[in-house]
Length: 568
Image 1 (spheres, rainbow, N blue to C red):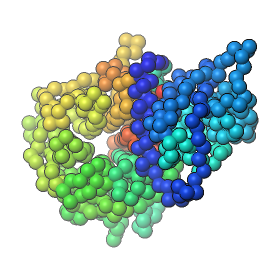
Image 2 (cartoon, rainbow, N blue to C red; image 1 turned 90 degrees about the vertical axis):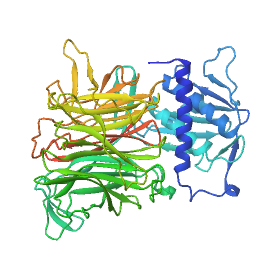
Image 3 (cartoon, rainbow, N blue to C red; image 1 turned 180 degrees about the vertical axis):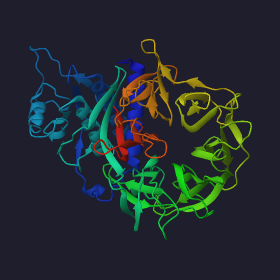
Image 4 (cartoon, rainbow, N blue to C red; image 1 turned 90 degrees about the horizontal axis):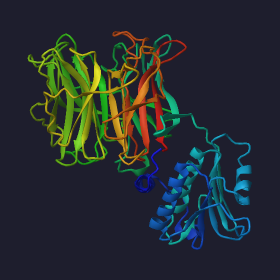
């Protein structure tokens, strides 16, 4: 583990800022007024943690100290619970006890968790003592975060804790999974859920139309962060294709929009955006959903954009864009970014991005229409979201048979844009990446760098349908995460997330929380693993992950979701 002081200071600052951001987006209509609130004066308290606490608890204890100072204006000393037997601690001392300390109050609080799950935690406020602990280091970290969110941040009085949440809070939490990347990163998989699974008989009612559903594929999702109605921030919205056979009188689409208001535990189908500009198009696929962080044209911040590939494979294809002003419940197709031919000369796989530095909305996509290139990656941009620029090339390689595609991008803490794409045609669809400091300058002839990890003489290589995200959590350089459809280990069931702590210079692997059988796949039917999506949460220690997997019992396709908490 990297345990230097600079890392802890940076992580503590990120931790505090993420909590403050979270608190701003939370709704608090049911909390009591200031006159009704019960407060506790913590001036004169000290923070005492277990002497041999894990590195995460040491860091989070420091974060608690910083948060109390920044919010309440009170600086509390931090010490461990070690003491000289000749001078035992004063039982009347005012202390905030972190982790399972040797104080009696810690033991008493832990006893209250006896019948709860192995990941339960408690906050117990007694006379002169505030106990914050969990059964594990992970749950203790959750308890610290809960304490900051519910007792420190809501306070409007200097040195005063807000006790509105209660003097004893015991949470019976069960972690789903805990995965690591060597000794460098730990991830707590807090939620795993199935958004949708194809019925075994393939027939189902979809918003009033009885359809034959073949597969679910190409998921994309977003966590709402910029909604005018604060209660909507934090909701998750996902979109993917259901590949439902056309129904007489039904919508001419296979797109479906789903939402979750409980952190991804349950999902509801809310909409099916339709092709309205060109109704001769057979359907919409290859979705990307994006929330505008700022005003673009007549669209305010918080507008949801759904860019999709509308295609009639025999004749034509469009990159169409739909917009929603009500968190995904209703949609309007309002522009076409580009048009081209059918299969072999078409355009595919859009990816939207708003660039704060220049105020442009960018749409990156794969382009088969240039006779000089079998396929290339390009972008167009717009100031109003309706009128789009000429094409600018991102990847247009010298070999005309090369097929770079499926562009996805994230911005890293060093100011660089990191893009991943599959390199097909003259390559076996291996995943490559390239970086730039200027979003308008990609050096199109540069083929980029193969994402590979040396392993016993045969490098591990990732291939097809890439996704990436960078988070400031996990180290002094943050954590870059990449995933794709397959690896060259050929066992078919061992899939990994690829992580980097140095902005993509070196890589290591982490077990995926959403495994699947990549051999349960044919091009025209299931397409298992098309395609993963990684999204950064408003709490920047959270990464949302969604992918198309298969049901082990019957092999049918499904869309699964996992919430990943980066905990070290």
